[in-house]
Amino acid sequence: MNIEKVFIEREEFWSKKKLKSSQESLD
Image (cartoon, rainbow, N blue to C red; front, top):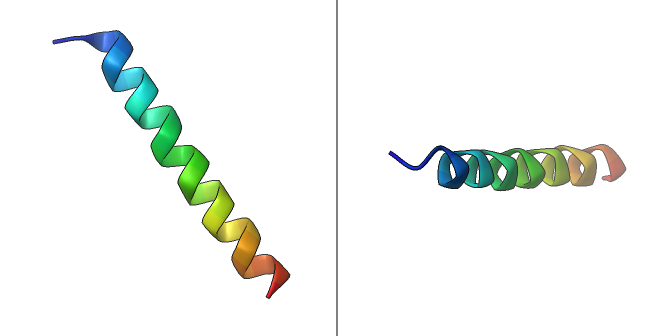
C-alpha cells in the first residue's frame, strides 16, 4: 500500500469537498 498515494488522494478529496461547501456558501 502506497501511503503517499493515499495521502494525495485524501488531500484532493478534501480540496473538492471544501471547494463545494464554499460554493454553496456563496450561493
